[in-house]
Length: 130
Image 1 (tube, rainbow, N blue to C red):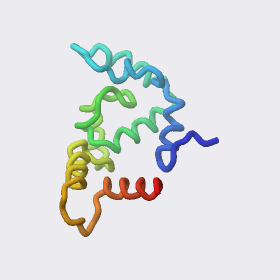
Image 2 (cartoon, one colour):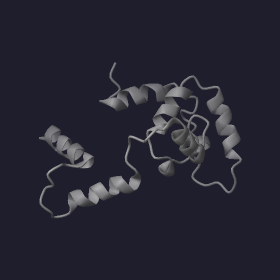
Image 3 (cartoon, one colour):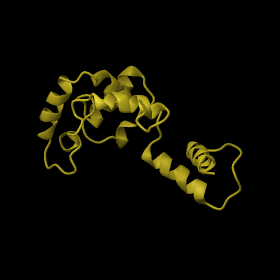
């Protein structure tokens, strides 16, 4: 049965459907907090989660500096330490890299010899629409 997603996200969506934090984003990723008391409740939710390993792998693929909230029971600072301990280089771009790609893409410059990731995604989307 298709969930309407394609590519790698379909697998990611699959494990997130089993996550204990599903429908509890307000506990895992609070918009505002004056202290860190939310962390203990979020960690309790993660400790009992059957997809904690998948969540950790997913979180480690992002630059920790761009992360917010609790992932697999870890704060962004703890994720950064885990990446360093494992020798993991995030495979996803930082927000700054993504935005820089967007700015380069929309500037009136000759097309670069090698397209950025965002340019490839936009080109693919345009082809699908036509």
